[in-house]
Image (cartoon, rainbow, N blue to C red; front, side, top):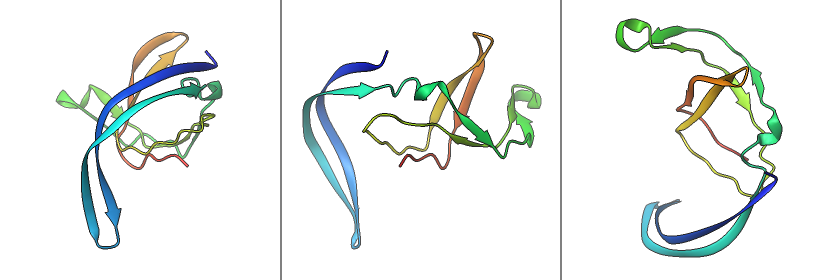
Length: 109
């Protein structure tokens, strides 16, 4: 899908970071129709670098592997987000074999 139309309604609470400190702002009303262009596909490409396997975890250390890497995804949308927790499906030959969890340092520009 190249584009999808979305309707967002509700309220948002934010914290504005200023030189004098954080300022909480509550109950900002939202009622907007917008569209997203291609954000779900990331142009069907991902750039991976600095890949290594540094350990394992979970019960008895056999539930997942720890593999730090650098990933670049192209965002063709005009919407940018910053976050600290991202979970993506891991696919192999069309079958989902697990999830990749990115929990630090994610930001888009």
